[in-house]
Amino acid sequence: MEKREDFRSMLQYLPLVFQSSSLVWPPSLEQELQTMSTGPSESMVISGEALALRITSMRRSLSLNVSYLAPYASQGYALFFDEKISREESAKFFGEVVPALCGLVIQMPSLLEMHYQKADYVLDGVTAKAGKPD
Image (cartoon, rainbow, N blue to C red):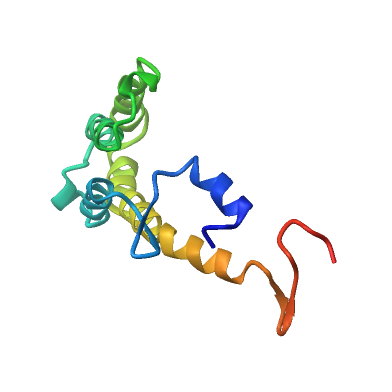
């Protein structure tokens, strides 16, 4: 899998690392995602401002430049989730959508591994070389 050009080209966009020949998120990011996947009672993400702070924290944990975010992004999150949509919609988003998305993101490394392990199998018993038509 590590030798596949299509796989290597995708890795430049994701902060995944190899650990014992498996793809994983860096531990600091994994911890943030795990916490957010448990819901607002644990993650304390109950507002647009809290979401923006978590995103900034994740970016910092990856040593990404926080200044690359639009200067008013955190204000935008706060405006949208705290003022533009109803409290009920906001609570549903932070209570259901954010934990579900974080749970899916946590699974992403293993899903990518599975995809690339099976990418050359077109049909049962038939393989195709990646990037080359039959």
